[in-house]
Length: 279
Image (cartoon, rainbow, N blue to C red; front, side, top):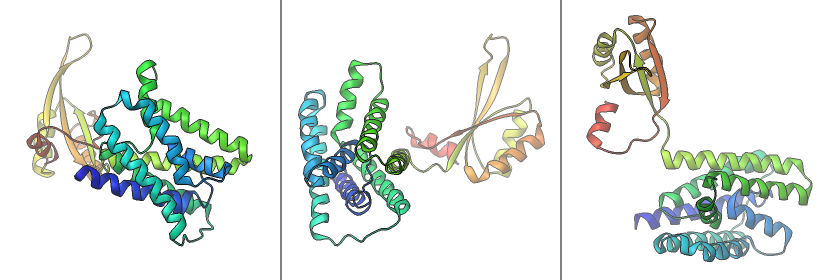
């Protein structure tokens, strides 16, 4: 039920992105929604119908490469999105948005939210994802690279048909925004940073971090590439807003300390360990 709730919400949001923002501005997004919009702009066929005409053959081609549960959920999400798009166009008064910037931004945001939620429901929002998986299994290319190639071909087609450079640029912005929102939905908003600290005064630094910042961490032991020297590394996860405070603290003890900052956008595994790192 949780998966279908995510897929239903995501499909409706994707339909909103298409019907309210992207289609009125004739902005093409990526994947099969973008192909559906493109087909609608070329031929007198409703966007939802066009999406189904594209998705159904892709599903039939790839159905033997994916499990039946994933295929069933994907078909549900695709059909719901297609039906919702056409119903919105038929029965809802869609306000006219004069700003291409607003249409691009909000179209990309809603599309990213929709696709991200569908993916979190363990389904696909379009058949191109399945095709990308199939091609990747027979080539050295990654699915993400194949999807990028497909989206690029859609954008190039827009340019060739409409001979409008601005439409290409707006479409590229929309696709980029969609990709960023999908990434945030799947990995979470980055509020934590992973800090690796190397210092000759690591014990003092660790004690100060514990007492003054009320944070815990882990001390790792390693060697250099030749194995001649043993080093200790302090691994700590901290809120991004407190990085400057940590830098001042560490460099105040050892101005030659090495600090490496990395994203900590997602934590999975033992919840007790996660709490230890975050606390």
